[in-house]
Length: 190
Image (cartoon, rainbow, N blue to C red):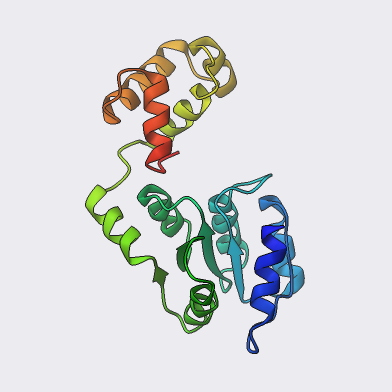
Protein backbone atom coordinates (compact mmCIF):
# COMPACT_ATOMS: atom_id res chain seq x y z
CA UNK A 1 0.00 0.00 0.00
CA UNK A 2 2.81 2.41 0.92
CA UNK A 3 4.75 1.53 -2.25
CA UNK A 4 1.70 2.19 -4.40
CA UNK A 5 0.97 5.46 -2.59
CA UNK A 6 4.55 6.65 -3.14
CA UNK A 7 4.35 5.67 -6.81
CA UNK A 8 1.09 7.60 -7.17
CA UNK A 9 2.57 10.62 -5.41
CA UNK A 10 5.66 10.66 -7.64
CA UNK A 11 3.53 10.13 -10.76
CA UNK A 12 1.79 13.44 -10.02
CA UNK A 13 5.07 15.23 -10.80
CA UNK A 14 5.24 16.41 -14.41
CA UNK A 15 8.91 15.55 -14.82
CA UNK A 16 8.95 12.17 -13.04
CA UNK A 17 7.65 8.81 -14.27
CA UNK A 18 7.37 5.61 -12.25
CA UNK A 19 8.41 2.83 -14.64
CA UNK A 20 8.78 -0.16 -12.29
CA UNK A 21 7.83 -1.41 -8.85
CA UNK A 22 9.16 -4.27 -6.75
CA UNK A 23 7.49 -5.61 -3.64
CA UNK A 24 10.59 -7.49 -2.46
CA UNK A 25 14.23 -6.57 -2.08
CA UNK A 26 15.35 -9.59 -4.08
CA UNK A 27 13.28 -8.32 -7.05
CA UNK A 28 14.86 -4.84 -7.18
CA UNK A 29 17.69 -5.52 -9.63
CA UNK A 30 15.41 -7.31 -12.11
CA UNK A 31 12.74 -4.63 -11.91
CA UNK A 32 15.33 -1.87 -12.32
CA UNK A 33 16.87 -3.63 -15.32
CA UNK A 34 13.49 -4.33 -16.96
CA UNK A 35 12.20 -0.81 -16.33
CA UNK A 36 15.47 0.86 -17.28
CA UNK A 37 15.21 3.04 -14.19
CA UNK A 38 17.34 6.06 -13.42
CA UNK A 39 16.49 6.18 -9.70
CA UNK A 40 15.44 3.39 -7.34
CA UNK A 41 13.49 4.28 -4.21
CA UNK A 42 14.07 1.65 -1.51
CA UNK A 43 12.98 1.08 2.07
CA UNK A 44 15.39 -0.46 4.58
CA UNK A 45 12.91 -3.14 5.60
CA UNK A 46 11.85 -5.17 2.58
CA UNK A 47 10.88 -8.84 2.37
CA UNK A 48 13.30 -11.17 0.61
CA UNK A 49 16.32 -8.88 0.94
CA UNK A 50 16.83 -5.71 2.96
CA UNK A 51 16.81 -2.41 1.12
CA UNK A 52 20.44 -1.91 2.14
CA UNK A 53 21.46 -5.23 0.60
CA UNK A 54 19.30 -4.51 -2.45
CA UNK A 55 21.05 -1.14 -2.83
CA UNK A 56 24.46 -2.81 -2.80
CA UNK A 57 23.36 -5.39 -5.38
CA UNK A 58 21.81 -2.70 -7.52
CA UNK A 59 25.02 -0.67 -7.38
CA UNK A 60 27.03 -3.72 -8.51
CA UNK A 61 24.61 -4.75 -11.29
CA UNK A 62 23.55 -1.32 -12.55
CA UNK A 63 26.07 1.27 -11.34
CA UNK A 64 24.37 4.12 -13.18
CA UNK A 65 21.14 3.78 -11.18
CA UNK A 66 20.81 6.28 -8.34
CA UNK A 67 19.48 4.98 -5.02
CA UNK A 68 17.21 6.84 -2.62
CA UNK A 69 16.54 5.21 0.75
CA UNK A 70 13.26 6.28 2.32
CA UNK A 71 12.63 4.77 5.73
CA UNK A 72 11.00 5.06 9.12
CA UNK A 73 14.34 4.03 10.64
CA UNK A 74 16.01 7.42 10.99
CA UNK A 75 19.02 6.07 12.85
CA UNK A 76 22.63 7.10 12.31
CA UNK A 77 23.78 3.48 11.89
CA UNK A 78 21.31 2.90 9.08
CA UNK A 79 22.41 6.10 7.39
CA UNK A 80 26.04 5.02 7.54
CA UNK A 81 25.21 1.54 6.21
CA UNK A 82 23.10 3.04 3.40
CA UNK A 83 25.96 5.26 2.31
CA UNK A 84 28.35 2.29 2.42
CA UNK A 85 25.88 0.38 0.21
CA UNK A 86 26.03 3.18 -2.34
CA UNK A 87 22.86 5.13 -1.59
CA UNK A 88 22.70 8.62 -3.07
CA UNK A 89 20.00 9.86 -0.71
CA UNK A 90 18.62 8.95 2.71
CA UNK A 91 15.29 10.40 3.85
CA UNK A 92 12.93 9.56 6.68
CA UNK A 93 9.28 8.92 5.90
CA UNK A 94 8.02 11.74 8.08
CA UNK A 95 9.66 14.29 5.76
CA UNK A 96 7.31 16.44 3.65
CA UNK A 97 6.16 14.76 0.43
CA UNK A 98 7.67 17.52 -1.72
CA UNK A 99 11.07 16.66 -0.27
CA UNK A 100 10.96 13.19 -1.87
CA UNK A 101 10.40 14.49 -5.41
CA UNK A 102 13.08 17.11 -4.82
CA UNK A 103 15.50 14.42 -3.63
CA UNK A 104 14.89 12.37 -6.79
CA UNK A 105 15.61 15.40 -8.94
CA UNK A 106 18.74 16.26 -6.96
CA UNK A 107 20.25 12.76 -7.14
CA UNK A 108 19.63 12.79 -10.89
CA UNK A 109 21.79 15.95 -11.00
CA UNK A 110 24.54 14.06 -9.14
CA UNK A 111 23.91 15.46 -5.66
CA UNK A 112 23.75 13.53 -2.40
CA UNK A 113 20.68 14.19 -0.28
CA UNK A 114 20.80 13.37 3.41
CA UNK A 115 18.49 14.46 6.19
CA UNK A 116 20.67 17.09 7.96
CA UNK A 117 19.60 16.21 11.51
CA UNK A 118 20.38 12.56 10.87
CA UNK A 119 23.71 13.40 9.25
CA UNK A 120 24.76 15.39 12.32
CA UNK A 121 23.72 12.53 14.60
CA UNK A 122 25.70 10.04 12.50
CA UNK A 123 28.81 12.20 12.69
CA UNK A 124 28.42 12.60 16.46
CA UNK A 125 27.91 8.89 17.02
CA UNK A 126 30.88 7.71 14.99
CA UNK A 127 31.38 4.47 13.12
CA UNK A 128 29.79 1.12 13.89
CA UNK A 129 32.26 -0.61 16.23
CA UNK A 130 31.08 -4.11 15.32
CA UNK A 131 32.89 -6.17 12.70
CA UNK A 132 30.93 -7.99 9.99
CA UNK A 133 31.37 -11.30 11.82
CA UNK A 134 30.30 -9.82 15.19
CA UNK A 135 27.16 -8.46 13.53
CA UNK A 136 26.47 -11.83 11.91
CA UNK A 137 26.81 -13.67 15.23
CA UNK A 138 24.77 -11.06 17.07
CA UNK A 139 22.00 -11.29 14.45
CA UNK A 140 22.01 -15.06 14.86
CA UNK A 141 21.69 -14.65 18.63
CA UNK A 142 18.72 -12.30 18.30
CA UNK A 143 16.17 -15.12 18.27
CA UNK A 144 17.49 -16.58 21.54
CA UNK A 145 19.57 -19.32 19.92
CA UNK A 146 22.19 -21.04 22.03
CA UNK A 147 25.89 -20.80 21.24
CA UNK A 148 25.75 -24.36 19.90
CA UNK A 149 22.85 -23.53 17.57
CA UNK A 150 24.58 -20.38 16.33
CA UNK A 151 27.82 -22.31 15.82
CA UNK A 152 26.00 -24.93 13.76
CA UNK A 153 24.26 -22.38 11.56
CA UNK A 154 27.35 -20.26 10.96
CA UNK A 155 29.83 -23.14 10.77
CA UNK A 156 31.89 -21.85 13.69
CA UNK A 157 33.05 -23.44 16.93
CA UNK A 158 31.08 -22.70 20.09
CA UNK A 159 34.15 -21.01 21.55
CA UNK A 160 34.41 -18.70 18.54
CA UNK A 161 30.72 -17.82 18.86
CA UNK A 162 31.22 -17.11 22.56
CA UNK A 163 34.20 -14.86 21.76
CA UNK A 164 32.31 -12.89 19.09
CA UNK A 165 29.32 -12.45 21.39
CA UNK A 166 31.59 -11.32 24.20
CA UNK A 167 33.21 -8.72 21.94
CA UNK A 168 29.82 -7.51 20.72
CA UNK A 169 28.55 -7.19 24.31
CA UNK A 170 31.66 -5.25 25.25
CA UNK A 171 31.52 -2.94 22.22
CA UNK A 172 27.84 -2.13 22.77
CA UNK A 173 28.39 -1.59 26.51
CA UNK A 174 25.66 -4.12 27.18
CA UNK A 175 25.20 -6.48 30.12
CA UNK A 176 24.17 -9.50 28.05
CA UNK A 177 23.53 -10.66 24.50
CA UNK A 178 19.87 -9.61 24.47
CA UNK A 179 20.81 -6.09 25.49
CA UNK A 180 23.64 -6.07 22.91
CA UNK A 181 21.15 -7.04 20.18
CA UNK A 182 18.72 -4.35 21.31
CA UNK A 183 21.44 -1.68 21.45
CA UNK A 184 22.87 -2.65 18.05
CA UNK A 185 19.39 -2.59 16.48
CA UNK A 186 18.52 0.74 18.08
CA UNK A 187 21.68 2.27 16.65
CA UNK A 188 21.09 0.71 13.22
CA UNK A 189 24.20 -1.48 13.39
CA UNK A 190 22.36 -4.73 12.60
